[in-house]
Length: 397
Image (cartoon, rainbow, N blue to C red; front, side, top):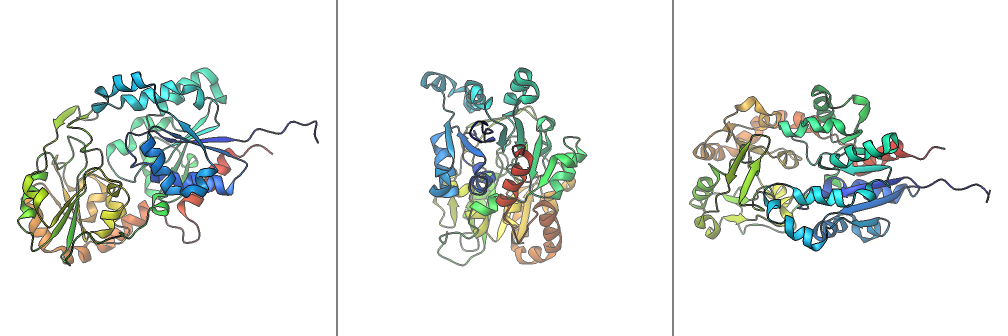
């Protein structure tokens, strides 16, 4: 009837507010499916930088992008410039963007985020708006096992869309969520990122290692072991290829600070011999660091504490881990996927046995992968995520 006002469309905001684009693929596909399959929702993509907005558009395609409302979270020029230097140490721009655009968040029903800095917005709006404040949904950007993966602050989210039962079990075990708050939807990054590389990285058939150190100054193997490892690899040019593909944030800063471990360290440079070696491919800043190009192309995964190991294990293969902080092999579940060593020199005897190691750890890898990544042959993770959001936030009938 014309005299009855229509109910407002539920507004769901997807937050892309990091300083790099590596988290975008974890939620972009869910956003695209919600737009395509649930027209009753108004879907908003809130982006912090033009680089990230461009990456999201690439992931979902222009047809899906036209169905999304785009919200620019950039800061006024003077404020952005003033924060540039301190932002190299702490995520001040991310926090400032959230504060500056607080009125936008007050207008939505839900905020979907792959990281936790947005919880500052939730706390402010809860004080101002009470139960009418938007609910916050967490979609982890990875599926790792580090302590920070289950940070106490995560308990402030209202709902969780996670990759597998492992994440549910750990959230519950840490007292961060109840099972009712969690929905297992799978790993949405697998939907928007192609598995196979689009080009050969080396003009030979030698085994290829991907070395994927984290940026954390306490846990990363790069600071104490990485340069020596690359130097040794360069001298084995006729035996192995190596892709140096660190976490995208490692070379964004020269000084890294870990608030969790109260540690700060200067990042060492890449040795010249590695930059010039024909068997080493170095990439410290391209989208290939997080689009699975390198994990797909590698025969051997060499890392420390990055959850990208599970992306490599989409197809079982050889894993070797460097325990830089000497925590012991039992420190993380994902270290069960291969041998753990504490020195770069100990890596190479294991690399010689890479074929045997792949077979030795295969059953463990398959078990942990399926515990971590719930794959539904009938539906993509993005579809499952969109369905979960529609169930959680549908307008009352």
